[in-house]
Length: 336
Ligand SMILES: [Ca+2]
Image (cartoon, rainbow, N blue to C red; front, side, top):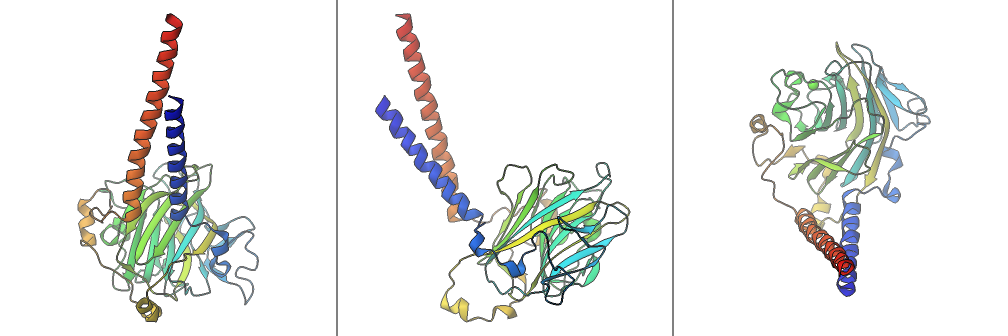
């Protein structure tokens, strides 16, 4: 019995180690790969004020030593902050720590934050205070449901890739152009809230960490996304009739160490046109209440994780069974 228990125990340890290794792979938070020139970190020294500054801002944005407030909790404010250094990394992961808070009651607050990776910077417009016909990637943290008929819960996080030809439909919360999304309770939380955007080998993955559990939860994961190098990272926010404080605490960009083929390396990545080779038209998302792309094939690590979970389940059952069996044996001994 003891032999069996120790075997089960070592199997469990082995599996847990594997889970840990897989998790490390999902969230690359390796400080060595942090790119300072694309990161916005407390206390934001020199932001906006010096010619050598790597970030500048416009509109209602207020930079303090502990947060960057894109808008205060007041009506009709628009603010943004932009990296001045174009990003030439092919594979990257951006971690955004943010805080949305205000005095408005449920559903009486707005509009949210957008995180950008775009060709143009500081280009004001109607989409969370930025240009509607942008080139590149936008991730929206939309706190107000403009569409009365929406069958989803807000705040809602969604992503959009644009080559300048598509207009974000504010009245429909960008539903017709979104690539996927998820609901996330991010407002007026007592703890820190995070969003991660990973772009690697044509795969866009968006994860959230908003429940104070220090773990990423997948929000969007799609392949076939093409984004060039040489674009700019930024963040913007807007308030309308309803408002909130929209604060960015940090934006940390990590380089992902990924190998590319010689053919890929020889391309001029700055010439890539932003696009998504969709399995279905984004307009079909209207029929999909979750806004997720079903039908994307399971990738290697997903299958591995699923198998691992199944294995873990079996092992846990075996351990519990063994313990119950042992307890019963002991009780039986006491009786006789
Ligand atoms: Ca909205």
